[in-house]
Length: 166
Length: 166
Image (tube, rainbow over all chains, first blue to last red; front, side, top):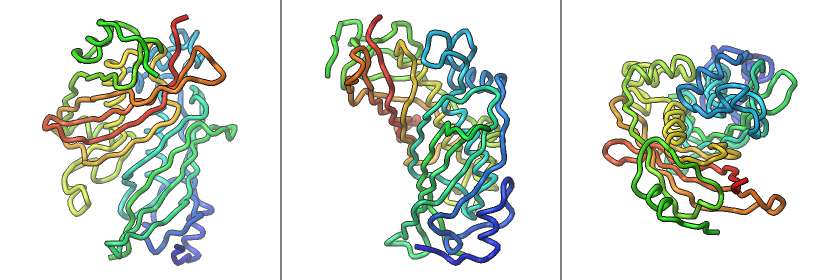
C-alpha cells in the first residue's frame, strides 16, 4: 500500500531532522518512507542516573562495576537507549495519532557507551490495512539507533495503529 | 534442559518476593522456574515526569491531553512500564551474570494508569545450550507486569545469556 506523496511529504521524509510540524495521516504514509531524528549526546552521568532508578546493575553504574563483565566498561541500560530513542522518534516521526506501539521488538547489537551521539534512523517497512476498520491500518516501523560512527547500537521494530484523516 | 533443583532453589522460585540474595547460575535454572517481584506504586506525577523526558506525547502528560485519544485519560508511556518492570526484575531474578537482554519483545495489552500497583511475574520458558560455548546457554524469560486487580498490562520476553559456575 502506498499513499499519496506530495512534494511536502517527500521533503519531510528525506531532508528533515528534528522537530515535527506537519502531522501525517494514513493517506500520507508509504512503505520506504524514512525519517531522521535529531542527535542526543549521552554522557556517563545520564547513564548512571537512569540506571540508579530503573536498572541498577553494576555494569550500568560504573566502570569498576563493569570490569570482568561482558561490557568491560560502563554501558547504558538498553532501556535507557530505548527511552532516548522514543524521545527522538516522538520529535521526528509526526504521526497524527501519535506513536503508540501495539507490539514491539528491541535488540542491542552493541553496548551504548558514554560520549555517544545518538541518532535514530526510522523507516516504515509495512502498512497493513485493517479488515474491520476501513479508516485504520497497522504500520510497521523499523528504527535504528546509531552512534556518531554510524554503528548500530539498537534495532527497534514497532507495529502502530494509524488512521485516515477524519 | 532442566538443571538441578535443590530445595533452596525451589523455595526461592516459589515463595519469595522482592530482593535477591542467592545468585543463580546455569546449573540452577530450569524451565518453569518462576519469580515474583516486589510491588511498585505508580502515581500520576511519576508518569508525567518520565513522559516529559522520554515520551512527551499528550496522552502521557495529562488527562486533558488524553481526551479524544484511544487512552481517554492519562496513561503511562509503555517505556515507563518497561523501565519499572526492569527495576522489579533486577531485584527479583538473581541471575549471577545479571539480566542482559540480547533480543526482547514487549507488548501492552492494556494501558498503565496512575494509581496502579505494579508487580512482575516472570518465568523461564526455554533454556537453549550454546553449541560453541559449553559453559553458556540462552535462557528465555517471559515476564507479565500486572496491576493490583491482576490485569496484565505488559508482556515482556527476553533472551538472555547465562553461564555455569566458574
